[in-house]
Length: 336
Image (tube, rainbow, N blue to C red; front, side, top):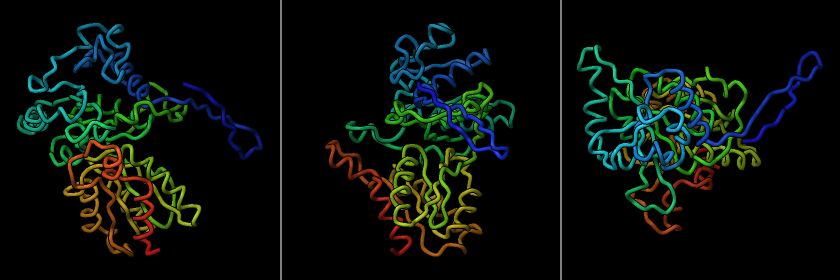
């Protein structure tokens, strides 16, 4: 963690200083868990190796020593027994999908609102590196398809911290999709976002970069890819507006529509498969809504390739969206 002060211009010719610190996504998640465990004694964490081992990715580091066995609980290495709050990877959640979909997602509705299910299913989602087909899937579209669940997909440290705190405080079951490759990445966080009271509302997207030529909509790790592509395109005079979805369900369609009405072009970017994916849902919602008449070209999707993930590194790279793919799709959409 590092710190810096940034001078900001002020109308009175004085200098205001904004406090920033560099925080990894892993530490942001750890802070959120720690603060929510401290704030509410009813909160507890359970999952594979979350206690004595500090979590497979060290997200729960130090929590077992601080809160003890009753609140930080190691579960058996078997998701079929009970769906824990923490999945070592969401690929394993398939073993618990009956409890997630048929129990957690539907209990509140089937009890006529008498029994809420305040549970968060969190863990790494999507492709990592070199782990092949059975450990490289994005489950955003899988779980977002199911009414009764909220589905969250953070990108940076601020997202991770603010959304996890909101998810824990929510009375509904929340599927919290992290990304293994992002755990060690550091992002700047302001003093405000480091506050114990800081939360990010579930269901609200964020415009990460303003632009007027084309809208790029993405979630999780690929928000960063979109920003990198936008930086390259800006040198060619193409200004991209980049939207970080943050939440997959409920989706902030209004923010997408407002951007499309300004840019008249839309490209969606995701690491999951194309068929029935997050981008496909965005296309349908835009087509059915008021933004459709503002489009000057068809919506373009950038997705993972429609195959099981290969093991070979070169094939893996070709199976996932790269910055060059986004740049190509933007130019195609703009007919450049």
